[in-house]
Image (cartoon, rainbow, N blue to C red; front, top):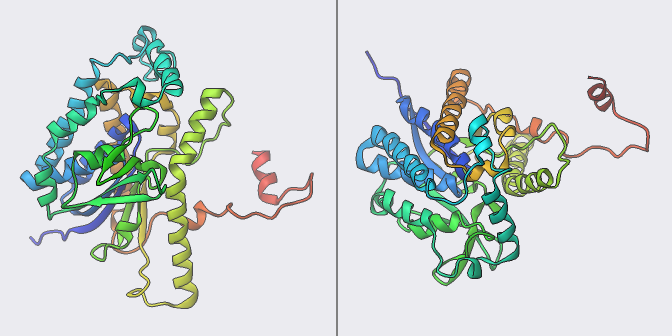
Length: 362
């Protein structure tokens, strides 16, 4: 019986603290499916950590080793978090609430980071996550891996532009640069340049994958909600939404550029060999992530991480059931629908479009 040919995909993995366990679930399901082959991964922050762990595992022992490496990594994250002073309140633990919004230690630390810069708050530069990544990931294997191309995005503090690190120059420092939140840690210095979290400039960066001539199917794994149905009311909700918009803005701009490229190709009849149209796909569940508070990104309890892992697997499984046959043929993520309300006519006060009226009457 002939083997089912592999379908080649690129993956773009967002950052989002412990919510990166959602991406762990997605990767676990994709690696399980031998019909799929990952050609490239672009990751930021937690997405970058997932990416290097996968490359390390693939190089050492293939798909099974990559899945095991992801499980081991996230288990180590949870084990390390047990010693963190930032924990859920006893009441939240009792009722199964994963948020830290009512945790006294979290609220105290959050206030402290707004008042005291990292250089004074943490003068020794202690970062337990750095030690964990260094212990869990063999970067010699990552840089030697030819089974998958890995791209890690960090933000150059001086220029404000994204910097893409890739093999054979990946290291624990490049990953920590990609995950460096400026209110928590000092900028990571690499070759004389200082870097902050890549989410400010590319969350994740798509253009390294668009430039990849070996694969035309790009799957974005999004863990930060683009849309929220309810308007933020409290100060915490407003700050949370501002952060979501900030960390999604670079992705939105790159998706808009791809949409314009598609329109140019269609309008001008350009040859795809010169102006290649990507087939875009999206793995995301808006309602699942809408229910998660921003503070839960610092919650690494094992029951929470395994819950997120299960949700991520379910996302990927649902997407594969619906769209596997489309891979290699056409996009399943409609950019025109995403940007349909980007430009609207400004109407005189009191007037409304038929679409607006219909939405208000629902």
